[in-house]
Each structure stands twice: as C-alpha cells, then as structure tokens.
Length: 452
Ligand SMILES: [Zn+2]
Image (cartoon, rainbow, N blue to C red; front, top):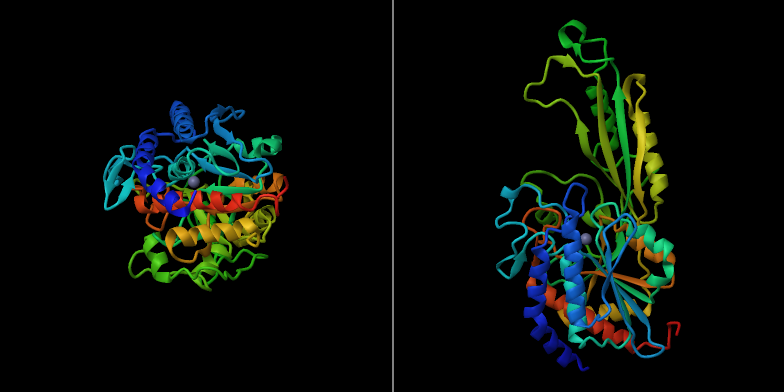
C-alpha cells in the first residue's frame, strides 16, 4: 500500500478510532486493589471486540494466574517475514478526588482538540494506536503481528512473571511498546531509557508510648524528629540525591528545557529547581529520591506529647546502568547511617525494578525514526523516561534479540496519573500513521537481518 493511501486510510479511520477510545474510557478499569475488578474484565472484553474489528480475528482473553486477563491476538504475515509484538495496557490509575476533574473522569469530553478522561492517554490511546494501524492496513499486515494488552500495568503485575514462564508466546524480532509519548505535542520522540525503582521503609521507635512533652521533653528522643533528621540526609546542599555510592549521569539526547519542565511538572512560580546538571541529566540519567509517605500525628488536634514511633517510605528512581537491587541496598545503608544521635532504626527493603536501555542501532530503530519523520515532518528526538515499565525488562530478557521501540500518543500536557488526563486527537492520528508506516517499512526488511 502506498504511503499516501495509508495516510488517507488512517484519517478516514479516525472517527471510528475515537469512538473506540471513548468506549474504553467509559469503563473504569482501575486495577489497584480495592477497586471493582469486574470493570477490568469488562474493559478486556471491549478490547477483544475492538481488535477483532480491526483484523485480529483471533483476539481473546488469556487468563494470567492471580491477575487480570491479558488480551492476546496474532496475525500471520507472508512466509519468512519478521514478527512484531505490540504492547499496551487497558488498566488505569484511580481517578482521585472527583472535584479535581473539570468533567467526570469516566465520561469522555473533548476540549480544544483533546479528549479528556482517565486512561485517554495512559494507556487506552496505545490500544487504539495499535488497532488503528492494523485497521489502516486492512487487517492484513505485511508481516507477523502479535498483540498483548495487559490489565495490570498500574499495579502489581502478574504478567511480568507470566512472560518469564511462557517465553515462546512473546517471541518477536521487534516490540512496539505504546506506553510513552512525545515530550511535547507534535514533537516526535523515541523513549530510549527507563529509570528503575528501589523502595525502602524506615521506622524509628524511641519510647514505649507517647510521653507528656512538658514532663519528659528534653532528654527523650522524639521519633519524628529522629526521622526528619534522617530523611534530611537523602539530599545534598544543592538538592541532588546524596545516597552514598550512587552518582549523577549525563544525558546526550533531548535537552529538556527548564521552562518546559516547570510547566509540565507544575512547579509553582518562584520555586527554584533543585540538584545539578541539565534538567535531562537529572531526569533521565541520575538517581532521584522522594519521601512518598510518612506516618505522623495530624496537625489538627496534635497532643502535647513526645512521639514514640514514626515511619516513612522512601522511593528512589534508578538511572540506566545502575543495578536496582544494589541501589536499594545503598539506599538502606544510607538511611541507617543517617540516623542521628546513635539511635538505631529499622529498615525494610521493599520493591525494586531494574532500569532499561534500548538498543538504538538496529534496522527497526532506523525504520521507526523514518516512520516518525514521515508522519510528523520532522526528526525524532531521544528522551528517557523517569518512570519504569517492569515488563519491558522481562520482554528484553526472554527475547534478547528483539529491538524494543517505546513511543505513544501521550504528550507533555496529558496529565497521566493526575486529574484531567487527556490525549491530543491530532497526536493520536499521527501515532496511528507512524505505526502503520513502521509495519510497512519493517516488511521490506524480511529475510535480511531477521531470523526466518
Ligand atoms: Zn501506562
């Protein structure tokens, strides 16, 4: 199919793609514990129907032990053609407080060319991108295509281990992970690295129970004060991560401007940024530490008492090139060593997930850059992502030969995981076209670099 024809088929298909996206957004498929898992199943079934209509005639639910089902489908291309695996997820983050949304989270609404609703970007737009590309190709891609739509990306994923247990089902020459996006609307972007994660919980216990601060205040250490002093050792004077044994790195792709960062992150006017190096260095090539939560008495009604115990959960984003478990050990050691006045603290090492670095010198990567150039009319930039997608590492483990491409319809304004999440409908169309073009370009490579 000629490029011009693909282009017009994508644009003709947009009304249907948008309707499919709205249908998915209406289903509150929050995967976190405590939310109704029947909605997840309902979303999975809707995905099956959408994929079937686009050409994945064998799309079906596949049960993942102890978790939400994944949707799987495959289409065989011509003999000896390459195999591409497409990935997205149908589960979403909780909507958060209702009054923070301009229009209800699960009622899709369009404003200024953007479609608002939970999951409109993350990651129901990814499902629609894969489906739309297949639809534009008339459901007959010029190579083998597998599709995997997960139901637990936003929570503890059971697909992660399922992939390791069933490596044959996920084999591919190229994987397209449609779960990232462009740094800015209309700016084609490939995500080449993901930071990993390392979490520790720290608990301080100093007294058998609350003690009257008038009667006992002075000699007895207040557990909350101990915790605050300990946590203050996580950053240096400039605000960089100070965990001993870890160092900051350099990013040589997109130079993310301070202005764009401030705007997308919502940093308030007058608040300075912290740390050293460029914004990209700090975001994608260096560790960062955050105190995610802290147990302490509420300000309202706080008694006049020395606090006997306090705890906090500390999360570190681990840059590519650093082992996440080693980083977690260093974080635990740093927390222990930062406790003041010789007070012992107890540290529980929590979750960890490795960082990821894509191979960017293969034929599929070159083809992906060409597809982006054709769809957007400009060269793609390379960026990292501060967050992790643990499944990507497992896919890379079971298919080390595969080139993994990370992109998507999200952009700097999409407010993933926050209120008023949205996707730009023009960006969605460009993404669908990019993906259809890539599938076309990859078919031309058959028999050369890939195994038959
Ligand atoms: Zn996502």
